[in-house]
Amino acid sequence: MSEPGTFRIAELVEGQCRFPVTPHRARPHERRFCGEPVAWKAGKPTSWCGQHLIEVCGQPGRAAGGASVADMAREPKVTA
Image (cartoon, rainbow, N blue to C red; front, side, top):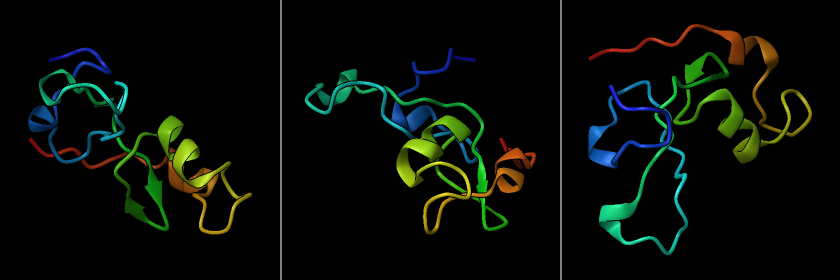
């Protein structure tokens, strides 16, 4: 398995963070994504891990629509 931050988009499976870790201007074949297990929000899995969910939605419980701490602590369902 690849290290976090080294995944190409085609290598990601359901339950892995899709947050881009390379610069936006990176060439398509150079783009890499996080790949850590996703966090949950409102009882459903998101597209991002806990760290990147905070970047996208704001601090848990502080931003409208932000994830709760309880949601983020939920175990992800990872299917291969």
